[in-house]
Amino acid sequence: MELRPLRYLIAVVDSGSVTAASRAVHIAQPSLSRQLRQLEAELGLELFDRAGGRLVLTPAGEQFVPIARDLLARAEAANAAAAALAAGRLDRVTIAAPPTTMTDVIAPFLATLNADDPFPSVLEQEPQTVYEALRRGADLAISTEPPPRRYASLVLAVLPVWLYVPAAHPWAGRDSVELDELIETTLLVLPPGFKPRQLLDQAAERSGIRLSRTVENSSAEVAQALTAAGRGLAVVTDDSRFDLVGLQIRGAEGPLRVQLHAGWDAEHHAADSLRALAGRVGAFCLHRYGLTVAPGG
Image 1 (cartoon, one colour):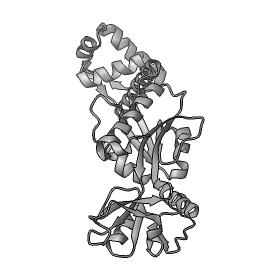
Image 2: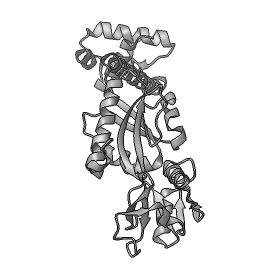
Image 3: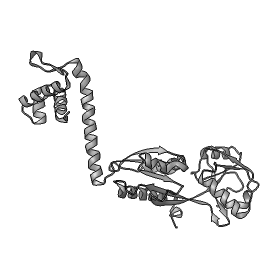
Image 4: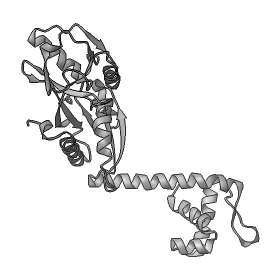
């Protein structure tokens, strides 16, 4: 089926007459009428009742018009997508990230986009599976886990692992806490698959410290809520909530910090645009958290 007769059909419906439609689509009236009859013959449907010299949609025509509009919209979308592919342009972008990164980095960054930027959509993924989303249609993945080597990548920021304490806690006036000070502290930690927990366990092992008073929470926000309730101290990378105060945790090799990575398919038709977008996310992190989170800084 050709799309041109469908456009003529919609022109007649929207214009109200063949005469007005012929002017709108720049075709002679007899030619437009002939195209409509050929469309009816091809479909095996009578779309118009021509009694009285006027074209009135039949019940079948009423039902077919939305289908025709949908087909034309899909064709236009396909043409636009093909043009974007050919130009290496990014009209839409799907970003995959873990929940914490989505809440603290991606969502605030998306609020800074303007009308000329690609239209975004997001996929929340667990840190261990975030890069698998690139094989399922995501354009850009951002995580504290480094991407597999087959993907192009960029380090966006280096973020602290925080120990959160209530404002009334004796440590609240400090900037940091030594790892060995936490031996007798109830720590509200994430499961082992999360980077803050991994860094905490690795630092403790290197220092020969046993952190036996740990309570796992699947949600970093819940860990902070329990801290506010006086049930322990949260070890997370999230932004502060519930008026908690963040202290950096210092191990034998310095403060515990996580790298925030972006990964994308190097063969993506808009790979250059994705690199530029990832760089903007990195610049946003510097603006939001300060130059101390700059990679290598």
